[in-house]
Length: 410
Ligand SMILES: Cc1ncc(COP(=O)(O)O)c(C=O)c1O
Image (cartoon, rainbow, N blue to C red; front, side):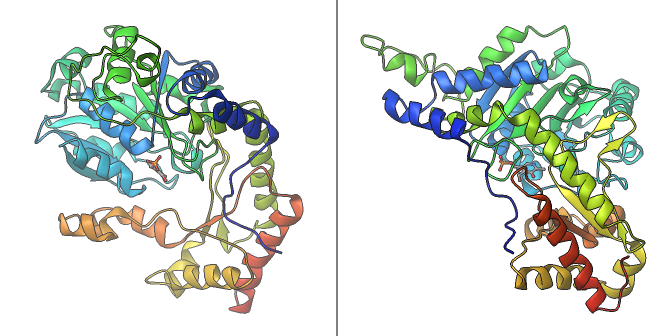
């Protein structure tokens, strides 16, 4: 049986929305993008949503909004995809890496040690769809507000370190039954092809700013600066007689096209059911893989509830330590499955083990838990189209790979 890792969910609704765009005579940013923004705002209960062409560009734009200056520091977990760090570099800031806890998420105690008067933002990552412990992170940020020194008018208005959620994995995640967006100043989703809800490539910036901000004003800033700082978008400009415009700031060019938004719109109608199916698959894996050989990812921790984007299985510490200084047992399992057409994956390599970050002077020894978790992690396929038989087959293949190496997993 072939099991791909993360194929997109292409339903009749998706085909319908995409066909409408193709027929409409307008394929870039326009009514479908606006409709998807409204869907995100309604689904998350946020103040406003701004669609962009990736999480990465959304994060760079957000850091520009924050007025990041050279020397300003942004704290990120070392356990994430490279884009979290690259966005800070592209926005002209300095990356500071923080270790994670056993939930794969930014460790609030480690964060406390890293905040200085140079810190302007923290970007916690909702790894695998599990919301970070935002209450603990917000408490650390509040406690450190005496240290805060603003280097831009927006930072001045905020008066503390900004909490910008990397929610690339966590559309639909909740804290105490409410959307997790209520816990961060700005939440940025990815709608890349492998994400829970996709637009092929894309991202969504969702605002939840404190009262001293005028939401509509800030929303306008993001809309203007995702399109070259242009006072009129291409849709309005294309109307007969609507040609005149001005450029009023050094904006980025990172708007989401309607042809992409249409895919996401088509997935919205079934998204609650897709989330539920992901949860069922999680629980099915958990039942099949309950064993001393593994550490299973939870769907819920306290009031934090995952969007079940990744099933991040871990080899128990004994096995990963005994067999794999450099990930060999893990790698062998992945190869065993690949030989049988089952695609497994790894999320993530620790950032300090990647050439760019190594060359910048980051060292894995400063983030020991990131390294320990990463070397024992195997991501199993999880998506709503998976049948129970596919889930059972993946679990069986992983167990067989261990058994072939003399490791019992029953
Ligand atoms: C945790 C995390 N952050 C950011 C990104 C970047 O998302 P995008 O590809 O939409 O820029 C990803 C994508 O895989 C991710 O996993």
